[in-house]
Image (cartoon, rainbow, N blue to C red; front, side):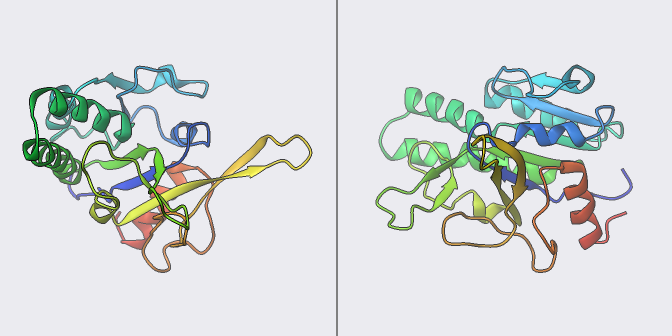
Length: 218
């Protein structure tokens, strides 16, 4: 690639709120889905995407390293970060104790984050939220296992967007999905000032176009 296009985007939302369905708007010929949950995508046509299953950090890091110089892949989706961190946590808790657990967990997650940022391809990372215990505002953060502090992952990303379902008042079913883009009291949403004039739908192709236009990436 002649120009680094990676402005990592973190998409956060409860299960079933449209995180993975946003992938359907991407070009399957140039998109790689790194599936850490061993499940089918929730939309028709997922068989046309390039999909790699990785169940542990070692395999995931191998996949990320192999992407260097691969011009046929423009977008990488990690679905999901939460599942991978849970895998890392299980390994760490099995093999370490005490302070070493905290140190090793932080080191491994940090290694993954650095690898994500290093990629030339545009990366979308998908994760699940959790509410900080005893928080009167019930603020949602990117879910972390083990001894990681709340907000540790958010500070590593410029763009963190939470799903906001649109409910049908008559059927009480989800009709559509908007993406939160402004900081608020109940989530750790954040995007650069003026990047989005209004909430976009979970259309990842359109979101990437908006991000690249903001940063003047061709």
